[in-house]
Image (tube, rainbow, N blue to C red; front, side, top):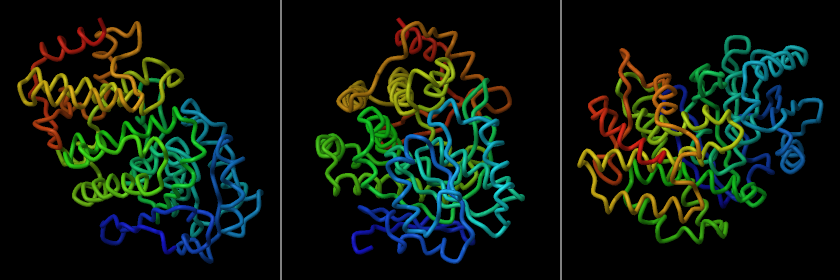
Length: 363
């Protein structure tokens, strides 16, 4: 644990640590919250062959205490949650037991949702194995499943006991998954930290080369931003600051839903959403074209898309964005930029400028 960086999400009685380090998930010392507990593990078919055995050895568990989901965003459904809940009941996990989510964002969201509703709520620990999950989805307590009408429309807030981010797991990621996670990293720089954005511009090659110090740096800096914002606004109430973490997501979720969660990874859709948010902000005169160019250039350098999928029309965006959870009193609210590192939640945007942005992007 000497190489471990530790942050804390400050939420009073629900506060918890984020531990970041190389190889830490293979050691018992990273899991003090699990000691002496009845444990169960949820993972998926991609993660299990690579990362499950070291975790089981560290926690002295057997395969009978593991549920393996088929991998993929299409499995993040109510039916899959029902399968996990049936298994938890059959395995007689008690109310004082603890569920461990080993995997990416799909596993973390789904297992966390099951923990939130099993016997009216049990403890769980996040062990994220993708960059996207380590910098974003494992922190903050948002759990849930997708619906055919939209992403994450069924869910609950349920904070983990701890988050264990082992940077070793990133070396096993397919490159496309690693790049997908970078979209969320870039998002944090755009919405809250212009110095982080500049650091990414100068150090992107180190991240792509999986340098351990560079990876730990971005995970810690992104988690610190999210921990601060979640501490101010745990449940994303009204126009609170937590909504700012959804920069690019209203556009991105529309892309994911339109493509049936099968063609684009989450981070790929968010990358395009970040470009659209920046372009719309510039049309309002809130940021300069230079800022937009920097955002688009960094996203493109990270190997991520900057335009919507072929065949997606402005009308598709408008219809799907109307289902976004940030719609309030029938009005769409968007996260836009007043400057690099300065995001706002607003319904006071020009609908004609939004239409122009979508038309140009979809042309």
